[in-house]
Image: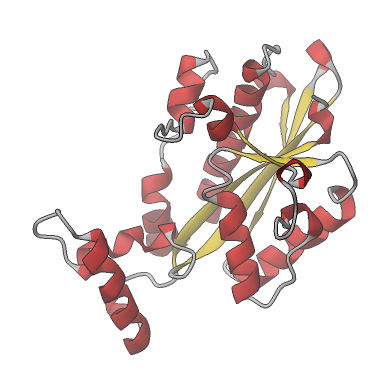
Length: 236
């Protein structure tokens, strides 16, 4: 595997509106329908109490941060470059990301990598691009392609080894493989709250990029490669 030909990704998503009470009438009705499904077997849950989960679903959420990184160099000289696109205007954010993919990552032999990417990051990006009227770029296309033509790596899928019942969070997989945990004061469950209550995109950006760095080292460990130490990680 040529690790220099992989773009590592992680996205952060939040609900479209800060609170359930702010939902327009049509969207409130649609969320109520969704919430009834989510509340099955969970006594006391209401559409309002479940609304913090709206950021999980592409129809009810939006992308506020796309973290990405790539490896430069070989073996014990490897360096990791990290960057992020953040913003309140999702269409602008996605447009910038499409231009990045088309410029540097559409060539043959290039791949994308994300943890649980095939269930979350890749479809989320595509759905939100369609919603925003943006053409899906070549690296994200899967329609009409044979499995070996889809250049999407997924560290969760690799770790399953065909066991489709299993789910392993990135933090757990990193711990199992001896990858140092990124020290941060937040996790994905509070990103929506931080965004809507504090508007702190920089804090979310830092959290997202630390996850990208963990993702890179998880893939390297999976292939029995040396980890990239913190001093060779460049946050741009």
